[in-house]
Image (cartoon, rainbow, N blue to C red; front, side, top):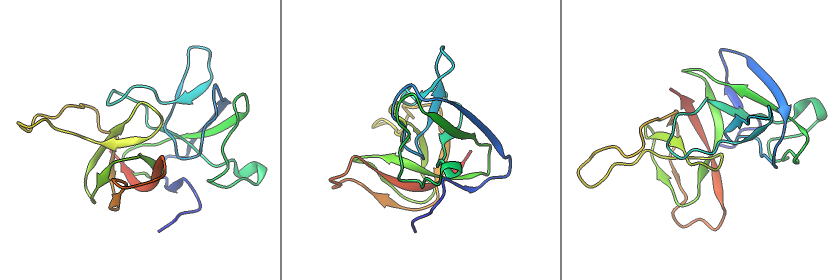
Length: 149
């Protein structure tokens, strides 16, 4: 199902805005820079604030309308139980219930384990609420409904 908003279920209503350090698409995970700007979350598998760029609804924009560098980005900080329509990294295949971590480029990736079952990434931020197969995708990424953990 395609959603028309990034914040599908939001129990906390934490909203912020900051200048974009780069082009950002609604649904991408974001982080603050030392200059107080926002950029795509940049640490793959690492600890991350659960912050996602929102659509610029105050300007009549939709989830497909990206923010340009140096524009003001609206973003939400989400808590456990909130549901977000986020980006999943190209090449990933997830099923309902898979844990997801940041990919280091503003998207999410499946939590992985090595051949012995030891988890490689240590900081999941969300659980997939729908299945999505991007293994044969010709696009860079796809949107997926997730629940923040």
